Length: 337
Image (cartoon, rainbow, N blue to C red):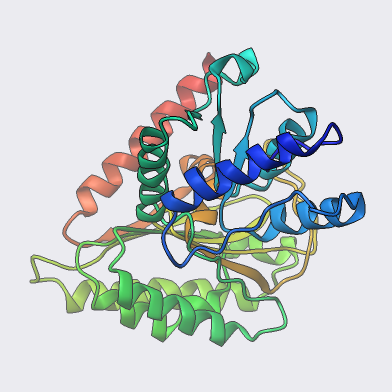
């Protein structure tokens, strides 16, 4: 992302020099670079390339030199997409004052090594943070058991520390899911379901009560099976008593299964308004979850704080209950603030 030039060749030459001598040497060898400046000066090609790469590129490097409006505009689009971006500038004075608090790297074409090393370090950190991991998306057309298999395989491969479930497809809470949990040591699982006595009034039907009872039976069976084990999963079950809004399964801050309900939430205190279908709609894996995780976790814990605890079991059951009571106390303080 560089400044467009109609004033002559020198600015385009400088941009190409920055790409070849500073940016490319700092990138891993498997990174393919693309330059937004069309050597033939075709604006249509430039715009098409910008739009495509802003959405698809694993990494964008934005040169803020000259405070070019189009570069700042493109930075805003990239930021809005939540995709990785590195900002550079040949002079700190070129960085607008309201962007100076955002990380950027200054470079000097006469002394390139410091900037090359800083960009290399930034890319390495982004790689460690998983920012170049592609999201795994599964559309509503795929069957729920396929999503369940995906989630169970993820648990097996990644040994998560926490799993939060909010009114997700109860098929995902069947034998496969609990079978995988039994083999997962030290994971904390919080399951938050609509109270079976209220389910029929919220278009979930009488079958929901049976599904909830089955989940409770699964947890009870796990409790008996692991009673004398010092390691194993800690599982808690809660019921909430209002209109369901979303179906949600979160594994750490790295995987998100999201679905929603055909009926609109009726509770005025629910901050999320998502309409859709009854099937889980999407699985997202990797760094993209981090841009969503905070909001959904906040919603989950707001509903959890007002829910009724049914049971907790496992080596850390006491801690899980204490954490829930702390959530309740915090929610009560916030209500009276």
